[in-house]
Structure formats: C-alpha cells, structure tokens
Image (cartoon, rainbow, N blue to C red; front, side):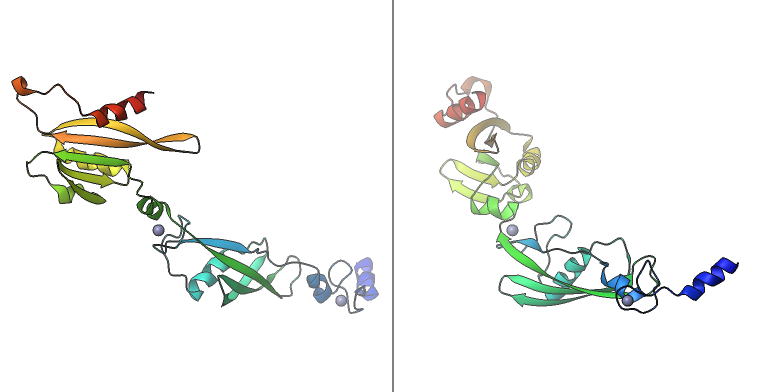
Length: 239
Ligand SMILES: [Zn+2]
Ligand SMILES: [Zn+2]
C-alpha cells in the first residue's frame, strides 16, 4: 500500500517532452507519435478497355467513379488496431488516383485516440478481360458446321457468331461448354467431331473443336469419302 503511494508521488516524466509519462517512458502524445495506426500501400486496378469490367472476380463490372475508388481504397487498409473512423479523399491525376486515407482509432494500451493520414496512388491499368480478348482475337473454342436443310433451333443454340457458307451455316462458339449445350438440341442429327490445333499457351496445346452436323443418310447411299480438311484436323489431334 505504501509502495503504490510512493510510486504515484514519483511522477515519471516523458523523456521526449517532459510532460507526465503514461506509457513506458512517454506521455500519450509522444508514445502515439512513434506508433502506426494502419498500413496501406499503392496498388493498381486492372480494367478491361473494351467492356469496362474490373479484372477482379470479387468486384466484377463497376463504374470507376470516385466513390468506388474510395471504397476500394478503404478496403485495403491493414491494421491490428481498433479503427473507429475511416475516410478517403480521391483526386484523379491522369491514369491514376491520388488517395488520402484518414483513420482515427486506438493503439493498445493507450487510451488516447490517434488520427493518422496516409497518401497512396492507385494506378488504373487498361487491359482486356478474357472474353473481350477471345472476341477480339476471334479465338473460338468450337465451331458447329450445320450441313442440313432441316430447320434448326439456331437462336436457342446461342452462337457467338454465325457465318453463312455455300454448304450451310457455321456457328462459332467462344467457349466449348456453350457449344456442348447447343449440340444437345441436335440429337436427331449425325454429328461428327474433329479437332484442329490452333496454338499453344503456357505449354498447353489449344485445340478448336469442329462438329459437323448432317442428316442421317439411308444405308445404301452412305458416302465413303471424308472431306480433306476434317481428315487433316483429326491427324493433328492424334499426333
Ligand atoms: Zn511527451
Ligand atoms: Zn472486357
């Protein structure tokens, strides 16, 4: 009891400013001055220059307005301290944003609130999303070659591109699974599949699938010949 009383009487002084010390050898203000309330770093946002989609699955398509930049910046704040207020001020400069983040909060065990400002740059990097890249480079995964005069539910097949050729129609699909779905609507036809190597990406070979859609022929008039191009395509696949 007596010792506690004595200690209080001693009144340690802050080694920095001489005010009464409260934490370690500092007063609240000097202690807080040396501590960081939060961290945040510069970062970039990738945006598709064609469709405006933001290339981050969690965000998807969004307008790049100041409110959005503000929100995305605030979400990047990292801290182990108790933040009670977050604010961001955004200014656009060319292809980047200058953002000032202001946080108020507490750093344990100090009971005094700290306010801290940090300035970061968010760079906007224009690129192409996967879909726009596929469309612009005409990278179709599958082509359904319609070679019948019967009526087909073309609209329901939802091709990404339709081409009229002498022999019929070519339906282009950017994605293989969309072509597979479309083929399910053509059960009554004879479907022949072939492949063609169209390139390589990250050591993986990329093939385009071709589906030739014809009527089932009566047994006696079945033709034996195969057109040359489909033969070539198949050999590329087997190699
Ligand atoms: Zn001090
Ligand atoms: Zn896009």
